Image (tube, rainbow, N blue to C red):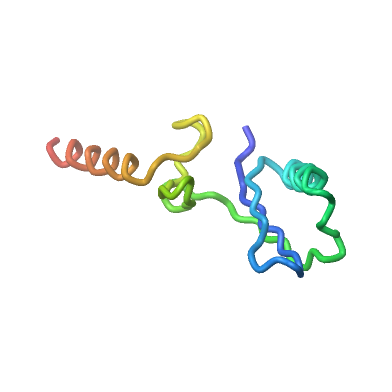
Length: 102
């Protein structure tokens, strides 16, 4: 199973990067091309000035989804690999309590 990575595409005309999470650079490029086609081909590859790749780290990598904070937990634990931060912290605290009681 390939690891999910975060690909950040920086374009001249955008203040923020376009961020795509994918299993490979080819898949991320394919998603970007599809997104560009669906939005009227307004992105030009000549305007791409930087591409950064980030590995997602369990319990550290985060993002907001619909205003809630999520942490990366990996696809072994959730369908999409992300868990609400509150739920994650409850699990970690509960595990620490159980460990300390032993």
